[in-house]
Length: 610
Image (cartoon, rainbow, N blue to C red; front, side, top):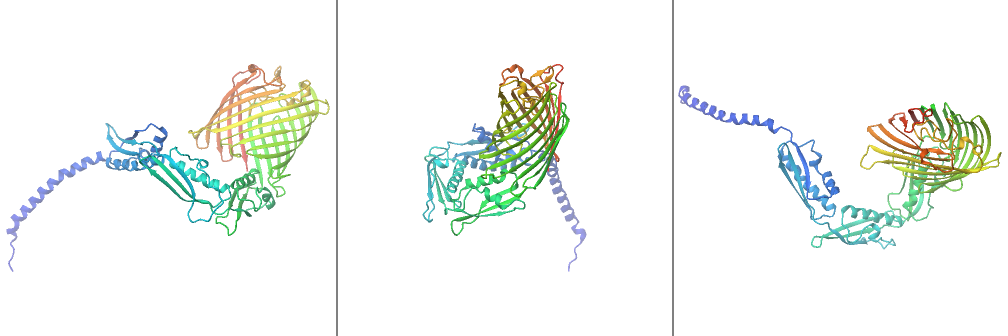
Protein backbone atom coordinates (compact mmCIF):
# COMPACT_ATOMS: atom_id res chain seq x y z
CA UNK A 1 0.00 0.00 0.00
CA UNK A 2 1.26 3.49 -0.85
CA UNK A 3 2.19 5.72 2.12
CA UNK A 4 0.86 9.31 2.15
CA UNK A 5 3.52 11.83 2.96
CA UNK A 6 2.16 14.39 5.53
CA UNK A 7 4.52 16.98 4.27
CA UNK A 8 2.99 16.66 0.84
CA UNK A 9 -0.49 17.58 2.27
CA UNK A 10 0.57 20.63 4.26
CA UNK A 11 0.00 23.14 1.42
CA UNK A 12 -3.48 21.72 0.83
CA UNK A 13 -4.33 21.81 4.57
CA UNK A 14 -3.08 25.36 4.85
CA UNK A 15 -5.24 26.45 1.92
CA UNK A 16 -8.36 24.80 3.47
CA UNK A 17 -7.79 26.57 6.82
CA UNK A 18 -7.36 29.91 5.07
CA UNK A 19 -10.64 29.43 3.14
CA UNK A 20 -12.46 28.53 6.41
CA UNK A 21 -11.17 31.67 8.16
CA UNK A 22 -12.28 33.86 5.26
CA UNK A 23 -15.74 32.23 5.31
CA UNK A 24 -16.18 32.69 9.06
CA UNK A 25 -15.01 36.29 8.91
CA UNK A 26 -17.71 36.97 6.31
CA UNK A 27 -20.38 35.63 8.66
CA UNK A 28 -19.32 37.54 11.77
CA UNK A 29 -20.45 41.09 10.78
CA UNK A 30 -24.04 40.06 9.92
CA UNK A 31 -24.29 38.15 13.20
CA UNK A 32 -23.08 41.18 15.10
CA UNK A 33 -25.55 43.32 13.18
CA UNK A 34 -28.39 40.99 14.19
CA UNK A 35 -27.30 41.23 17.80
CA UNK A 36 -27.20 45.01 17.52
CA UNK A 37 -30.74 45.12 16.09
CA UNK A 38 -32.31 42.83 18.69
CA UNK A 39 -32.79 45.55 21.33
CA UNK A 40 -34.80 47.64 18.86
CA UNK A 41 -37.02 44.69 17.98
CA UNK A 42 -37.71 44.08 21.63
CA UNK A 43 -38.92 47.63 22.32
CA UNK A 44 -42.61 47.45 23.38
CA UNK A 45 -45.23 48.05 20.72
CA UNK A 46 -47.37 51.13 21.39
CA UNK A 47 -50.58 51.58 19.43
CA UNK A 48 -54.07 53.08 19.46
CA UNK A 49 -57.35 51.97 17.85
CA UNK A 50 -59.87 54.03 15.89
CA UNK A 51 -63.09 53.11 14.06
CA UNK A 52 -64.22 55.17 11.08
CA UNK A 53 -67.19 55.09 8.75
CA UNK A 54 -70.03 55.13 11.30
CA UNK A 55 -71.38 57.69 13.78
CA UNK A 56 -73.66 55.47 15.88
CA UNK A 57 -71.93 55.57 19.29
CA UNK A 58 -73.78 52.46 20.45
CA UNK A 59 -72.64 50.46 17.43
CA UNK A 60 -69.07 51.77 17.80
CA UNK A 61 -69.01 50.66 21.42
CA UNK A 62 -70.36 47.24 20.43
CA UNK A 63 -67.64 46.83 17.80
CA UNK A 64 -64.97 47.83 20.30
CA UNK A 65 -66.33 45.31 22.82
CA UNK A 66 -65.53 42.34 20.51
CA UNK A 67 -62.11 43.60 19.42
CA UNK A 68 -58.93 41.99 20.74
CA UNK A 69 -57.07 45.05 19.46
CA UNK A 70 -58.98 47.20 21.94
CA UNK A 71 -58.59 44.73 24.80
CA UNK A 72 -54.84 44.34 24.32
CA UNK A 73 -53.76 47.99 24.09
CA UNK A 74 -52.00 47.59 27.44
CA UNK A 75 -50.66 44.11 26.52
CA UNK A 76 -49.62 44.49 22.85
CA UNK A 77 -48.16 41.77 20.63
CA UNK A 78 -44.35 41.92 20.23
CA UNK A 79 -44.15 42.69 16.49
CA UNK A 80 -45.96 44.72 13.86
CA UNK A 81 -46.69 41.52 11.89
CA UNK A 82 -48.61 40.06 14.85
CA UNK A 83 -50.36 43.40 15.30
CA UNK A 84 -51.61 43.26 11.71
CA UNK A 85 -52.75 39.63 12.19
CA UNK A 86 -54.71 40.58 15.31
CA UNK A 87 -56.42 43.49 13.52
CA UNK A 88 -57.26 41.23 10.56
CA UNK A 89 -58.90 38.71 12.90
CA UNK A 90 -60.96 41.53 14.46
CA UNK A 91 -62.54 42.46 11.12
CA UNK A 92 -64.33 39.10 10.98
CA UNK A 93 -65.70 39.58 14.51
CA UNK A 94 -66.89 43.07 13.67
CA UNK A 95 -68.65 41.92 10.51
CA UNK A 96 -70.54 39.36 12.62
CA UNK A 97 -71.67 42.23 14.83
CA UNK A 98 -72.88 44.16 11.77
CA UNK A 99 -74.89 41.15 10.60
CA UNK A 100 -76.38 40.73 14.08
CA UNK A 101 -77.55 44.35 13.87
CA UNK A 102 -79.21 43.81 10.47
CA UNK A 103 -76.34 45.02 8.22
CA UNK A 104 -75.94 41.79 6.27
CA UNK A 105 -73.68 43.19 3.53
CA UNK A 106 -71.58 45.33 5.86
CA UNK A 107 -67.80 45.11 5.58
CA UNK A 108 -64.88 45.99 7.82
CA UNK A 109 -61.26 46.47 6.75
CA UNK A 110 -58.18 47.13 8.88
CA UNK A 111 -54.94 49.05 8.35
CA UNK A 112 -51.94 49.55 10.60
CA UNK A 113 -50.57 53.05 10.16
CA UNK A 114 -47.12 54.21 11.27
CA UNK A 115 -47.01 57.32 13.39
CA UNK A 116 -44.09 59.15 14.96
CA UNK A 117 -44.13 57.37 18.32
CA UNK A 118 -46.67 54.62 17.87
CA UNK A 119 -48.86 52.62 15.50
CA UNK A 120 -52.54 53.25 14.83
CA UNK A 121 -54.97 50.48 13.91
CA UNK A 122 -57.73 51.96 11.76
CA UNK A 123 -60.89 49.92 11.21
CA UNK A 124 -62.92 51.23 8.28
CA UNK A 125 -66.56 50.19 8.52
CA UNK A 126 -68.96 50.20 5.58
CA UNK A 127 -72.25 49.13 7.13
CA UNK A 128 -74.53 49.62 4.16
CA UNK A 129 -78.27 49.85 4.74
CA UNK A 130 -79.95 47.60 7.32
CA UNK A 131 -82.11 44.76 6.06
CA UNK A 132 -85.77 44.88 7.07
CA UNK A 133 -88.26 42.15 7.89
CA UNK A 134 -90.61 41.38 5.03
CA UNK A 135 -92.35 38.20 6.15
CA UNK A 136 -92.70 36.59 9.60
CA UNK A 137 -94.29 33.14 9.69
CA UNK A 138 -95.13 31.01 12.72
CA UNK A 139 -96.13 27.49 11.68
CA UNK A 140 -96.46 24.08 13.35
CA UNK A 141 -93.54 21.71 12.96
CA UNK A 142 -93.88 18.94 10.42
CA UNK A 143 -95.00 15.48 11.49
CA UNK A 144 -96.49 16.49 14.86
CA UNK A 145 -99.97 15.59 16.08
CA UNK A 146 -102.69 18.15 15.57
CA UNK A 147 -102.73 20.61 18.46
CA UNK A 148 -105.25 22.99 19.99
CA UNK A 149 -102.51 25.47 20.84
CA UNK A 150 -103.13 28.95 19.51
CA UNK A 151 -100.01 30.08 17.70
CA UNK A 152 -99.41 33.80 18.36
CA UNK A 153 -99.22 36.41 15.65
CA UNK A 154 -95.94 38.16 14.73
CA UNK A 155 -97.15 41.31 16.49
CA UNK A 156 -97.72 39.35 19.72
CA UNK A 157 -94.08 38.26 19.77
CA UNK A 158 -92.81 41.76 18.98
CA UNK A 159 -92.10 41.54 15.24
CA UNK A 160 -93.65 43.44 12.39
CA UNK A 161 -92.90 43.93 8.71
CA UNK A 162 -90.60 46.81 7.92
CA UNK A 163 -88.58 46.79 11.11
CA UNK A 164 -84.84 46.12 11.07
CA UNK A 165 -84.13 42.40 11.33
CA UNK A 166 -81.59 42.24 14.11
CA UNK A 167 -80.44 38.96 15.64
CA UNK A 168 -81.47 40.20 19.06
CA UNK A 169 -85.06 40.93 18.01
CA UNK A 170 -85.40 37.58 16.21
CA UNK A 171 -84.05 35.57 19.16
CA UNK A 172 -86.08 37.59 21.67
CA UNK A 173 -89.24 37.01 19.64
CA UNK A 174 -88.57 33.27 19.79
CA UNK A 175 -88.41 33.43 23.58
CA UNK A 176 -91.66 35.41 23.68
CA UNK A 177 -93.27 32.83 21.39
CA UNK A 178 -92.45 29.99 23.79
CA UNK A 179 -93.56 32.07 26.79
CA UNK A 180 -97.00 32.64 25.22
CA UNK A 181 -97.39 28.93 24.51
CA UNK A 182 -96.43 28.01 28.08
CA UNK A 183 -99.01 30.50 29.34
CA UNK A 184 -101.59 28.42 27.47
CA UNK A 185 -100.53 25.30 29.37
CA UNK A 186 -97.81 23.89 27.11
CA UNK A 187 -94.67 23.66 29.31
CA UNK A 188 -92.72 21.49 26.84
CA UNK A 189 -93.21 23.71 23.79
CA UNK A 190 -90.11 24.26 21.67
CA UNK A 191 -88.98 25.83 18.42
CA UNK A 192 -87.94 22.86 16.30
CA UNK A 193 -86.49 25.05 13.54
CA UNK A 194 -85.89 28.72 12.86
CA UNK A 195 -85.05 29.89 9.38
CA UNK A 196 -83.82 33.34 8.37
CA UNK A 197 -83.82 33.86 4.61
CA UNK A 198 -81.97 36.98 3.42
CA UNK A 199 -82.72 38.52 0.01
CA UNK A 200 -79.75 40.72 -0.93
CA UNK A 201 -81.52 42.03 -4.03
CA UNK A 202 -84.41 43.57 -2.08
CA UNK A 203 -82.50 43.94 1.21
CA UNK A 204 -85.29 42.14 3.04
CA UNK A 205 -85.58 39.08 5.28
CA UNK A 206 -88.05 36.29 5.84
CA UNK A 207 -88.18 34.67 9.28
CA UNK A 208 -89.89 31.30 9.80
CA UNK A 209 -90.48 29.73 13.21
CA UNK A 210 -91.48 26.05 13.21
CA UNK A 211 -93.09 25.27 16.57
CA UNK A 212 -93.78 22.04 18.42
CA UNK A 213 -96.15 22.97 21.29
CA UNK A 214 -96.09 19.52 22.88
CA UNK A 215 -99.01 18.35 24.98
CA UNK A 216 -101.22 20.58 27.12
CA UNK A 217 -100.62 19.85 30.80
CA UNK A 218 -102.52 20.24 34.06
CA UNK A 219 -101.08 20.51 37.55
CA UNK A 220 -100.51 17.15 39.18
CA UNK A 221 -99.05 16.13 42.52
CA UNK A 222 -96.85 18.54 44.47
CA UNK A 223 -93.70 17.03 45.95
CA UNK A 224 -92.24 19.02 48.87
CA UNK A 225 -88.71 18.48 50.22
CA UNK A 226 -86.41 20.25 52.67
CA UNK A 227 -88.81 20.97 55.56
CA UNK A 228 -87.48 20.63 59.11
CA UNK A 229 -89.43 22.85 61.52
CA UNK A 230 -92.14 24.17 59.20
CA UNK A 231 -95.21 21.98 58.75
CA UNK A 232 -96.05 20.78 55.26
CA UNK A 233 -99.56 22.19 55.63
CA UNK A 234 -98.15 25.72 55.76
CA UNK A 235 -96.60 25.24 52.32
CA UNK A 236 -99.64 23.47 50.85
CA UNK A 237 -101.92 26.33 51.93
CA UNK A 238 -99.79 28.76 49.93
CA UNK A 239 -100.11 26.86 46.64
CA UNK A 240 -101.85 29.07 44.08
CA UNK A 241 -103.36 26.33 41.90
CA UNK A 242 -105.60 23.32 42.29
CA UNK A 243 -104.68 19.84 41.16
CA UNK A 244 -106.14 19.30 37.69
CA UNK A 245 -106.02 23.02 36.81
CA UNK A 246 -104.33 23.95 33.50
CA UNK A 247 -100.59 24.53 33.96
CA UNK A 248 -99.62 28.21 34.33
CA UNK A 249 -96.11 29.69 34.84
CA UNK A 250 -97.77 32.79 36.33
CA UNK A 251 -99.35 30.74 39.13
CA UNK A 252 -96.01 29.09 39.84
CA UNK A 253 -94.30 32.48 40.16
CA UNK A 254 -97.03 33.73 42.50
CA UNK A 255 -96.42 30.64 44.63
CA UNK A 256 -92.67 31.38 44.74
CA UNK A 257 -93.42 34.93 45.84
CA UNK A 258 -95.67 33.68 48.65
CA UNK A 259 -93.00 31.28 49.89
CA UNK A 260 -90.39 34.06 49.93
CA UNK A 261 -92.61 36.69 51.55
CA UNK A 262 -92.40 35.59 55.20
CA UNK A 263 -88.63 35.01 55.23
CA UNK A 264 -88.85 31.39 56.40
CA UNK A 265 -86.75 29.95 53.57
CA UNK A 266 -83.28 30.75 52.26
CA UNK A 267 -83.79 28.62 49.13
CA UNK A 268 -87.06 28.40 47.18
CA UNK A 269 -87.09 26.29 44.01
CA UNK A 270 -90.37 25.45 42.27
CA UNK A 271 -90.19 23.52 39.01
CA UNK A 272 -92.14 20.97 37.00
CA UNK A 273 -90.83 17.54 36.09
CA UNK A 274 -88.21 17.62 33.35
CA UNK A 275 -89.78 15.08 30.99
CA UNK A 276 -93.37 14.96 29.71
CA UNK A 277 -95.55 12.58 31.78
CA UNK A 278 -97.37 9.63 30.26
CA UNK A 279 -100.68 11.38 30.94
CA UNK A 280 -101.33 15.12 31.15
CA UNK A 281 -100.74 15.49 34.91
CA UNK A 282 -97.55 17.41 35.55
CA UNK A 283 -95.76 16.79 38.85
CA UNK A 284 -94.45 19.91 40.61
CA UNK A 285 -91.25 19.73 42.65
CA UNK A 286 -90.94 22.16 45.57
CA UNK A 287 -87.42 22.25 47.01
CA UNK A 288 -86.96 24.38 50.13
CA UNK A 289 -84.26 25.17 52.63
CA UNK A 290 -85.32 26.73 55.91
CA UNK A 291 -83.55 29.67 57.46
CA UNK A 292 -82.49 29.35 61.09
CA UNK A 293 -85.61 29.28 63.21
CA UNK A 294 -84.26 31.73 65.80
CA UNK A 295 -82.43 34.98 65.13
CA UNK A 296 -81.05 37.87 67.14
CA UNK A 297 -80.58 41.44 65.97
CA UNK A 298 -78.40 43.96 67.76
CA UNK A 299 -77.69 47.59 66.93
CA UNK A 300 -75.69 50.25 68.72
CA UNK A 301 -74.96 53.87 68.07
CA UNK A 302 -74.12 57.30 69.29
CA UNK A 303 -75.74 60.64 68.51
CA UNK A 304 -74.55 63.98 69.82
CA UNK A 305 -78.12 64.98 70.68
CA UNK A 306 -79.30 61.68 72.25
CA UNK A 307 -76.13 60.05 73.54
CA UNK A 308 -75.43 56.32 73.38
CA UNK A 309 -78.18 53.89 72.49
CA UNK A 310 -78.95 50.53 71.02
CA UNK A 311 -81.56 47.90 70.35
CA UNK A 312 -81.99 44.16 70.78
CA UNK A 313 -84.46 41.90 68.97
CA UNK A 314 -85.06 38.15 69.34
CA UNK A 315 -87.43 36.29 67.07
CA UNK A 316 -88.83 32.83 66.49
CA UNK A 317 -89.81 32.57 62.82
CA UNK A 318 -92.11 29.56 63.22
CA UNK A 319 -93.39 29.34 66.77
CA UNK A 320 -95.88 26.50 66.21
CA UNK A 321 -94.51 25.23 62.89
CA UNK A 322 -96.89 27.25 60.73
CA UNK A 323 -94.87 30.41 60.12
CA UNK A 324 -96.03 32.16 63.30
CA UNK A 325 -93.54 34.99 63.94
CA UNK A 326 -92.86 35.90 67.57
CA UNK A 327 -90.72 38.99 68.16
CA UNK A 328 -89.44 40.38 71.45
CA UNK A 329 -87.41 43.54 71.38
CA UNK A 330 -86.21 46.59 73.23
CA UNK A 331 -84.74 50.00 72.32
CA UNK A 332 -82.53 51.66 74.90
CA UNK A 333 -80.86 55.06 75.04
CA UNK A 334 -80.14 57.77 77.54
CA UNK A 335 -83.60 59.23 76.87
CA UNK A 336 -85.92 56.42 75.87
CA UNK A 337 -86.79 52.85 76.78
CA UNK A 338 -89.14 50.81 74.64
CA UNK A 339 -90.16 47.20 75.09
CA UNK A 340 -92.34 45.29 72.64
CA UNK A 341 -93.79 41.84 72.08
CA UNK A 342 -95.58 40.97 68.85
CA UNK A 343 -97.00 37.83 67.29
CA UNK A 344 -97.93 37.41 63.64
CA UNK A 345 -100.35 34.61 62.78
CA UNK A 346 -100.21 33.90 59.02
CA UNK A 347 -102.95 32.67 56.68
CA UNK A 348 -105.79 33.82 58.93
CA UNK A 349 -108.72 33.68 56.50
CA UNK A 350 -106.78 33.31 53.26
CA UNK A 351 -103.14 32.61 52.34
CA UNK A 352 -102.42 36.33 51.87
CA UNK A 353 -103.87 37.56 55.16
CA UNK A 354 -102.05 37.78 58.51
CA UNK A 355 -103.19 38.74 62.00
CA UNK A 356 -100.70 40.78 64.05
CA UNK A 357 -101.00 41.22 67.83
CA UNK A 358 -98.70 43.50 69.78
CA UNK A 359 -98.05 45.09 73.16
CA UNK A 360 -95.70 48.10 73.41
CA UNK A 361 -94.36 49.88 76.51
CA UNK A 362 -92.49 53.18 76.18
CA UNK A 363 -90.75 55.44 78.66
CA UNK A 364 -89.65 58.50 76.68
CA UNK A 365 -87.79 61.52 78.08
CA UNK A 366 -86.47 63.80 75.30
CA UNK A 367 -86.15 67.57 75.71
CA UNK A 368 -89.68 68.11 74.35
CA UNK A 369 -91.66 66.09 76.94
CA UNK A 370 -91.70 63.15 79.32
CA UNK A 371 -94.16 60.33 78.65
CA UNK A 372 -95.04 56.83 79.72
CA UNK A 373 -97.18 54.95 77.23
CA UNK A 374 -98.70 51.48 77.15
CA UNK A 375 -100.30 50.39 73.88
CA UNK A 376 -102.03 47.23 72.78
CA UNK A 377 -102.90 46.74 69.12
CA UNK A 378 -104.25 44.18 66.70
CA UNK A 379 -104.38 44.46 62.93
CA UNK A 380 -105.16 42.46 59.82
CA UNK A 381 -102.55 42.60 57.06
CA UNK A 382 -103.69 41.78 53.52
CA UNK A 383 -101.19 41.29 50.70
CA UNK A 384 -102.79 42.39 47.41
CA UNK A 385 -99.84 41.39 45.23
CA UNK A 386 -97.72 43.62 43.07
CA UNK A 387 -95.94 44.93 46.16
CA UNK A 388 -99.15 46.46 47.61
CA UNK A 389 -100.44 45.63 51.09
CA UNK A 390 -103.25 46.94 53.29
CA UNK A 391 -103.66 46.78 57.03
CA UNK A 392 -106.35 47.83 59.47
CA UNK A 393 -107.13 47.18 63.09
CA UNK A 394 -107.82 48.55 66.53
CA UNK A 395 -105.66 49.81 69.38
CA UNK A 396 -105.97 51.15 72.91
CA UNK A 397 -103.33 53.44 74.43
CA UNK A 398 -102.85 54.61 78.00
CA UNK A 399 -100.63 57.69 77.88
CA UNK A 400 -99.29 59.99 80.59
CA UNK A 401 -97.41 63.05 79.26
CA UNK A 402 -95.68 65.95 80.98
CA UNK A 403 -94.72 69.05 78.97
CA UNK A 404 -93.82 72.56 80.18
CA UNK A 405 -94.50 71.41 83.76
CA UNK A 406 -98.05 70.36 82.91
CA UNK A 407 -99.22 66.76 83.33
CA UNK A 408 -101.93 65.28 81.06
CA UNK A 409 -103.29 61.74 81.03
CA UNK A 410 -105.01 60.15 78.04
CA UNK A 411 -106.91 56.95 77.37
CA UNK A 412 -107.17 56.62 73.60
CA UNK A 413 -108.93 54.13 71.40
CA UNK A 414 -107.94 54.20 67.74
CA UNK A 415 -108.15 52.43 64.40
CA UNK A 416 -104.71 52.26 62.73
CA UNK A 417 -104.90 51.98 58.95
CA UNK A 418 -102.06 51.66 56.42
CA UNK A 419 -101.32 51.20 52.73
CA UNK A 420 -97.83 50.24 51.58
CA UNK A 421 -96.48 49.99 48.04
CA UNK A 422 -93.05 48.49 47.55
CA UNK A 423 -91.24 48.60 44.19
CA UNK A 424 -88.24 46.36 43.67
CA UNK A 425 -86.77 43.57 45.79
CA UNK A 426 -87.15 43.57 49.56
CA UNK A 427 -84.43 42.59 52.00
CA UNK A 428 -81.55 44.08 49.99
CA UNK A 429 -80.91 47.73 50.92
CA UNK A 430 -78.42 48.14 48.04
CA UNK A 431 -80.84 47.11 45.27
CA UNK A 432 -82.80 49.64 43.22
CA UNK A 433 -86.19 50.15 44.80
CA UNK A 434 -88.74 52.44 46.32
CA UNK A 435 -91.52 52.35 48.88
CA UNK A 436 -94.53 54.54 49.60
CA UNK A 437 -96.29 54.35 52.95
CA UNK A 438 -99.59 55.99 53.86
CA UNK A 439 -100.75 55.62 57.47
CA UNK A 440 -103.79 57.08 59.12
CA UNK A 441 -105.11 56.67 62.65
CA UNK A 442 -108.26 58.27 64.04
CA UNK A 443 -108.12 58.62 67.85
CA UNK A 444 -110.90 59.05 70.40
CA UNK A 445 -110.03 60.28 73.91
CA UNK A 446 -112.18 58.61 76.55
CA UNK A 447 -111.31 61.36 79.09
CA UNK A 448 -111.97 64.46 76.97
CA UNK A 449 -114.48 62.93 74.53
CA UNK A 450 -112.50 64.51 71.71
CA UNK A 451 -111.35 63.15 68.36
CA UNK A 452 -108.35 63.78 66.14
CA UNK A 453 -106.77 61.96 63.19
CA UNK A 454 -103.07 61.62 62.43
CA UNK A 455 -102.01 61.00 58.81
CA UNK A 456 -98.47 60.46 57.50
CA UNK A 457 -97.31 59.92 53.91
CA UNK A 458 -93.69 58.91 53.43
CA UNK A 459 -91.55 57.50 50.66
CA UNK A 460 -88.02 56.19 50.21
CA UNK A 461 -86.06 55.71 46.98
CA UNK A 462 -82.73 53.98 46.42
CA UNK A 463 -81.09 53.99 42.99
CA UNK A 464 -77.74 52.76 41.70
CA UNK A 465 -76.66 55.32 39.12
CA UNK A 466 -76.68 53.68 35.63
CA UNK A 467 -73.22 53.49 34.09
CA UNK A 468 -71.49 54.49 37.35
CA UNK A 469 -71.36 51.28 39.36
CA UNK A 470 -69.81 52.80 42.47
CA UNK A 471 -72.36 55.62 42.89
CA UNK A 472 -75.87 55.43 44.37
CA UNK A 473 -78.59 57.92 45.29
CA UNK A 474 -80.98 57.71 48.23
CA UNK A 475 -83.92 60.05 48.73
CA UNK A 476 -86.77 60.25 51.21
CA UNK A 477 -89.64 62.59 52.00
CA UNK A 478 -92.47 62.77 54.53
CA UNK A 479 -95.67 64.81 54.78
CA UNK A 480 -97.88 64.61 57.85
CA UNK A 481 -101.00 66.25 59.24
CA UNK A 482 -103.13 66.08 62.41
CA UNK A 483 -106.77 67.08 62.01
CA UNK A 484 -109.07 67.64 64.96
CA UNK A 485 -110.76 70.21 67.15
CA UNK A 486 -109.58 71.50 70.52
CA UNK A 487 -106.37 73.00 71.83
CA UNK A 488 -102.85 71.66 71.86
CA UNK A 489 -103.38 69.82 75.15
CA UNK A 490 -106.10 67.73 73.47
CA UNK A 491 -103.39 66.09 71.35
CA UNK A 492 -100.76 64.23 73.40
CA UNK A 493 -97.31 65.81 73.04
CA UNK A 494 -95.76 62.45 72.15
CA UNK A 495 -98.17 62.07 69.21
CA UNK A 496 -97.46 65.49 67.67
CA UNK A 497 -94.99 65.97 64.83
CA UNK A 498 -91.33 66.85 65.41
CA UNK A 499 -88.36 67.18 63.06
CA UNK A 500 -84.63 67.14 63.59
CA UNK A 501 -82.07 64.41 64.26
CA UNK A 502 -81.07 61.17 62.55
CA UNK A 503 -83.64 59.98 60.04
CA UNK A 504 -85.08 63.50 59.82
CA UNK A 505 -82.91 66.63 59.51
CA UNK A 506 -79.32 65.86 60.39
CA UNK A 507 -77.32 68.72 61.86
CA UNK A 508 -80.13 69.69 64.27
CA UNK A 509 -80.84 68.13 67.65
CA UNK A 510 -83.55 65.49 67.99
CA UNK A 511 -87.07 67.03 67.74
CA UNK A 512 -85.69 70.59 67.86
CA UNK A 513 -87.06 71.66 64.46
CA UNK A 514 -90.64 72.28 65.53
CA UNK A 515 -92.74 75.05 67.11
CA UNK A 516 -90.95 76.35 70.20
CA UNK A 517 -91.87 77.94 73.51
CA UNK A 518 -88.67 79.74 74.34
CA UNK A 519 -86.08 77.10 73.53
CA UNK A 520 -88.37 74.14 74.24
CA UNK A 521 -89.96 72.24 71.32
CA UNK A 522 -93.67 71.53 71.77
CA UNK A 523 -94.46 69.74 68.49
CA UNK A 524 -96.76 70.65 65.64
CA UNK A 525 -99.86 69.56 63.79
CA UNK A 526 -98.08 69.07 60.46
CA UNK A 527 -94.73 67.93 59.11
CA UNK A 528 -92.65 68.24 55.96
CA UNK A 529 -89.19 66.70 55.66
CA UNK A 530 -87.02 65.64 52.73
CA UNK A 531 -83.52 64.33 52.14
CA UNK A 532 -81.11 63.59 49.30
CA UNK A 533 -77.96 61.50 49.81
CA UNK A 534 -75.17 60.41 47.46
CA UNK A 535 -73.05 57.39 48.32
CA UNK A 536 -69.85 56.33 46.55
CA UNK A 537 -67.86 53.16 47.15
CA UNK A 538 -64.19 54.20 47.12
CA UNK A 539 -62.73 50.74 47.76
CA UNK A 540 -64.35 47.38 48.37
CA UNK A 541 -66.55 47.58 51.48
CA UNK A 542 -65.79 51.24 52.24
CA UNK A 543 -67.76 54.22 50.98
CA UNK A 544 -68.32 57.91 51.51
CA UNK A 545 -71.58 59.82 51.57
CA UNK A 546 -72.79 63.39 51.23
CA UNK A 547 -76.28 64.57 52.14
CA UNK A 548 -78.63 67.51 52.44
CA UNK A 549 -81.77 67.35 54.60
CA UNK A 550 -84.57 69.87 55.05
CA UNK A 551 -87.98 70.46 56.56
CA UNK A 552 -89.82 71.41 59.72
CA UNK A 553 -92.84 70.72 61.89
CA UNK A 554 -95.57 73.39 61.79
CA UNK A 555 -98.24 74.78 64.11
CA UNK A 556 -101.05 74.54 61.55
CA UNK A 557 -102.57 71.31 60.28
CA UNK A 558 -100.84 71.74 56.94
CA UNK A 559 -97.33 73.10 56.18
CA UNK A 560 -97.97 76.73 55.26
CA UNK A 561 -94.81 78.81 55.64
CA UNK A 562 -91.74 77.88 53.61
CA UNK A 563 -89.72 80.42 55.62
CA UNK A 564 -89.88 78.01 58.55
CA UNK A 565 -87.96 75.32 56.66
CA UNK A 566 -84.49 74.57 58.01
CA UNK A 567 -81.70 72.79 56.17
CA UNK A 568 -78.79 70.63 57.26
CA UNK A 569 -75.92 69.17 55.26
CA UNK A 570 -72.93 66.97 55.84
CA UNK A 571 -71.18 63.74 54.97
CA UNK A 572 -70.00 60.48 56.36
CA UNK A 573 -68.34 57.11 55.99
CA UNK A 574 -69.86 53.69 55.34
CA UNK A 575 -68.04 50.48 56.23
CA UNK A 576 -69.59 47.08 55.51
CA UNK A 577 -67.70 45.15 58.16
CA UNK A 578 -67.89 41.43 58.97
CA UNK A 579 -70.10 42.24 61.99
CA UNK A 580 -72.50 44.40 59.96
CA UNK A 581 -72.71 47.85 58.38
CA UNK A 582 -71.12 50.71 60.32
CA UNK A 583 -72.01 54.32 59.57
CA UNK A 584 -70.47 57.60 60.72
CA UNK A 585 -72.12 60.90 59.78
CA UNK A 586 -71.49 64.50 60.73
CA UNK A 587 -74.21 67.05 60.05
CA UNK A 588 -74.09 70.84 60.11
CA UNK A 589 -77.10 73.18 60.53
CA UNK A 590 -77.22 75.55 57.56
CA UNK A 591 -79.58 77.90 59.44
CA UNK A 592 -78.12 77.78 62.93
CA UNK A 593 -80.33 79.36 65.61
CA UNK A 594 -78.21 81.09 68.23
CA UNK A 595 -78.65 79.56 71.66
CA UNK A 596 -80.59 76.58 70.26
CA UNK A 597 -78.48 74.72 67.72
CA UNK A 598 -74.97 73.34 68.18
CA UNK A 599 -72.45 73.84 65.38
CA UNK A 600 -72.61 70.17 64.36
CA UNK A 601 -74.09 66.78 65.25
CA UNK A 602 -72.40 63.36 65.04
CA UNK A 603 -74.19 60.08 64.30
CA UNK A 604 -72.67 56.59 64.66
CA UNK A 605 -74.57 53.35 63.97
CA UNK A 606 -73.74 49.63 63.99
CA UNK A 607 -76.21 46.91 63.00
CA UNK A 608 -75.74 43.16 63.44
CA UNK A 609 -78.18 40.32 62.74
CA UNK A 610 -77.47 36.63 63.37
